[in-house]
Amino acid sequence: MDWDYRKPGTRICVCFDVSNDDALEAWRIGDDPSVEQLTRLFHCGRRCSLCIPLLDTLLSEFKAGCWPAKE
Image (cartoon, rainbow, N blue to C red):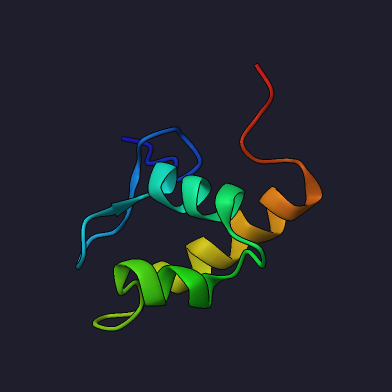
């Protein structure tokens, strides 16, 4: 079974039930997209922190225009 955290709607932060769609929406409307923004909004990283490396990668790809993939 493959788990692709880039696939739309995939839950990234298990502790607080935050999906990559939630992150994408916050980053699109925010002035300064960051993982810290998600921590403030959704509490990502405040419990187990396993989501932080995934969110860092998604944020880098979002800023580079590589994620989400163009259809």
